[in-house]
Image 1 (cartoon, protein in one colour):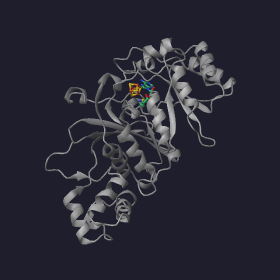
Image 2 (cartoon, protein in one colour; image 1 turned 180 degrees about the vertical axis):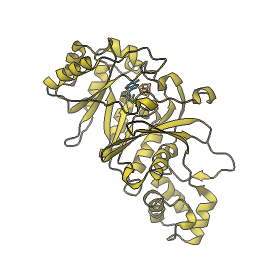
Image 3 (spheres, helix red, strand yellow; image 1 turned 30 degrees about the horizontal axis):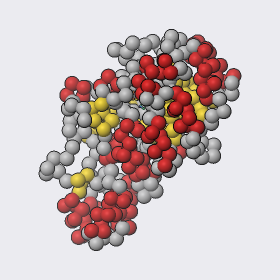
Image 4 (cartoon, helix red, strand yellow; image 1 turned 45 degrees about the vertical axis):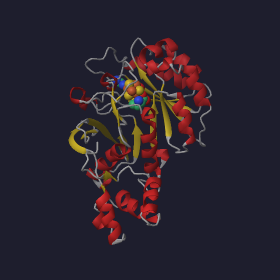
Length: 354
Ligand code: SAH
Ligand code: SF4
């Protein structure tokens, strides 16, 4: 949060907003691209070093803005190389992001909120409730701060928005962040390398398709019957499975693009062969792939992860029906960096939910 003496953070400022400001300053709009080029492509964060800008503009920028990222306060590396980064935000709250290496692919799992208000009963983040939304700068800042700290061969190639929070519940800030990420003038990561995971906020999915950002969509389905989904994902009471699937059926997909369905396997809850059969029925004919995620446990969690045999028979049934099905490798579980294991100490130090 900005204190009264603190300058505006230029990170996260959209192209449009900055162009508007520059018009008032009698500066040409292309100056925005020069500045973005310094920041996002060259990693130069001191206006003084932006040598193709006039001295007057550099001074004005200096008076108005600075360039700040969330403060990296800790780093934990898993045996499998997965690294969890801990950040302190300007108001003292903490968030986590996870860097996952997989041969040439280096994926950043990014957070969009401190906590989450959707209350899925198998998810540790849910136990925090929603503390607050992250700003665009805090989302972009996770990428920038981590990427800067990584050696050349480990730089981020892919982004999954699957960290703390429900991205579509922080819609405006998220869309601004994604615009900066995919923009050729900004971070310049192709939308095809970004995956946004949502619990299925139907109205927001509809709005999102109009943004034309071309990022991949992953839907946390996690159950095949409303009675079960109502219980483990309360959002299902508002947007039941059929309503969600109807919305996805209308979602425009580019050639060869598919929607990913995530399915957290919870022993005795949603992992039976009948579930696999119902899932095949729900997804029949849909351009999709399925990610099965055996539940990652945490101390206060009330579930159990199914046996390997059970997971494999669930997968095999779907494969026999010609679905593309992956079992999500558990990465970073020894550092509590796996899916659904992110939550921070901010529970005890946090401000009231906004
Ligand atoms: N809020 C978004 C993104 C964050 S959760 C969403 O729900 O999709 C990212 C993924 O982790 C989701 O697919 C969710 O179902 C899964 N998940 C949550 N808790 C988990 C746990 N304890 N074990 C395994 N997967 C979990
Ligand atoms: Fe929120 Fe996603 Fe966790 Fe559900 S699974 S509580 S939507 S972060």
